[in-house]
Image 1 (cartoon, rainbow, N blue to C red):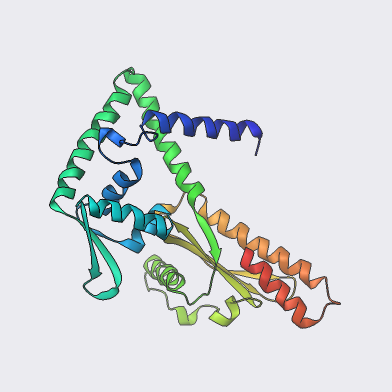
Image 2 (spheres, one colour):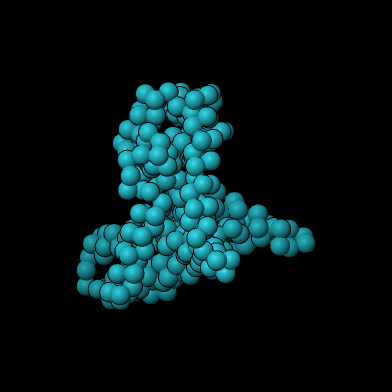
Length: 273
């Protein structure tokens, strides 16, 4: 990427953060900063699990805990163990929190109108279209792809969706047992690798690579959820798997290394993919 592109992104970030009032301690002229206001919005009227809030906002647990403690002191939220699992913390808005959320919504609408009001009709249309495109591209850039065990909870969820979609595409359904097998051992380093794509902490895609020999890898289980298609997630998953293939090829060329050392190197590199 070019230096001018980086400069443009930074300039855009400064302009937006100033225009929406993110620099103020009293966001939307209320008694709290943007972080606390956003957390109230994400908790919403239905409530939410604390771990889901952390994943959705991509914030560390310590910071979310501090925000929640502040909101609890203001008597806007109440945290308690989930009914079905005492290890899971559930947070909901109090009556005061619901009133504050309604007021934040009203003021956020007013701010949005103040952004649009000075513009002509044509300028408004251009701005809204540009915002939609920017939001889509920002979502694309926020996708994270990591290698993990093919039997992890998120990996299993992706594979279930993968096979379900295949079943829906064929009139007679799809039987996974009749497909070319790829068990967990074959998709675990150094025999293979399984990657999961996430957006806002939620799994939205997956892909796998199974090593056929020291220089050739077979791509398996490529899937992207329908509402994330068009963001380039499939391309990035494939590029990640291709990078793993190159790593295997490089390590295969170091045949003079002891097997244990060579395998350890492949595992280390695959985890980076």
